[in-house]
Image 1 (cartoon, rainbow, N blue to C red):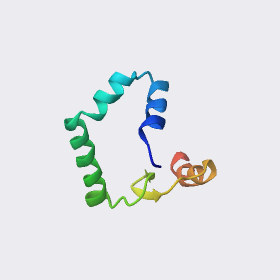
Image 2: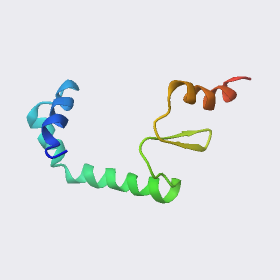
Image 3: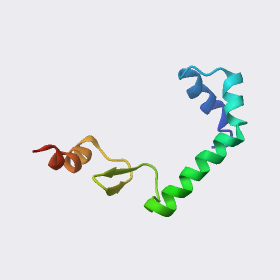
Amino acid sequence: MEKPIPPLLAIAKQAGFTEQTFNACLANQQMLDGIESIRQRAIKQFKVQSTPTFFINGTAHPGALSIDEMAKAIDPYLKG
C-alpha cells in the first residue's frame, strides 16, 4: 500500500478518533516502544511468526482460522 495513513485514519474515525487524536497516537513514541517490546516478546518467548496467531490451551495456531477450525481446536476443552 503506497499511502497507508488515509485508510488507517478512516478506520480510526469509525472507532471514535478524530484526525487530531489519530495523529497524536501516531506520534506517541512511548506507546510505539511498548508495542515493539510486546512484539519482540511474542517473537522471542512465544515464537510467534505470523499475525494472527491464536494460543489455545498453550498450543499455537498460526494464521487466520475459520470458525470451524477454531471450534475444532476449542471444543475438546469445553467438554467436561
